Image (tube, rainbow, N blue to C red; front, side, top):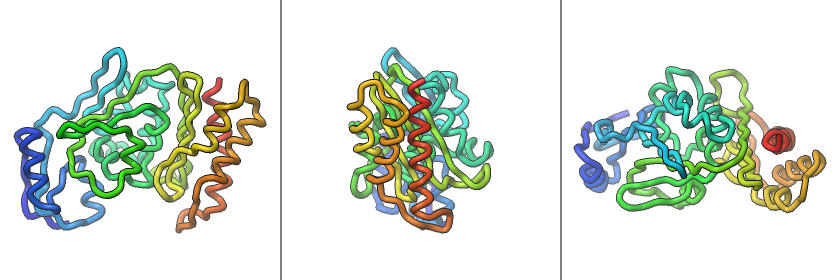
Length: 264
């Protein structure tokens, strides 16, 4: 990795100005994935003095600064209080502690990495992303956004609602990337089903959700049917880790299991 300039921003306005100067200027979060990708960078913009490493809450939502590390996030009492701890658990599944002490929540989201446990853990819930300057969009909309968003992620807003969550990462060893991952929630009586690393990015299984949300008092057979619909509607692919068919079979198992778990 080659970096021509290290730039420590004095404000968000300063950071944004610097970011616009050159397409090869990038924001430094934890820096782990930038280093791994090995891209050539003109200016690496450091936001570490701007106070973006805090978690706060009010009556309606939890606000997570974009520079909060994954380790801080997973250990936060506030995050663990949400949806039965499912969101915190998803982050806890990311590689090892040393990695999570450096990697940031904002960096994981901005990269839109298809293997991201963080994204699959958050997508079943009402989550909004706050960007500088003056832009807010849902996590789902950001994942579907075409092209590069040339703004700065400031915070992640997680809405507080009544509900339960489930997260499952299927992996070969403890420190591996996922073969596939799943996030399922039941919030205010409505189910959401997310499948990630198919190996494409995390996505909601909308047909499965439509089916199960229109069943009054669903049974185990209904959960099985919803899982089969999810496996049918989503695209799965082969790679060195697993076949498309194996990922599809895992989807049938874990979506059903997740739906049953959040209904307890």
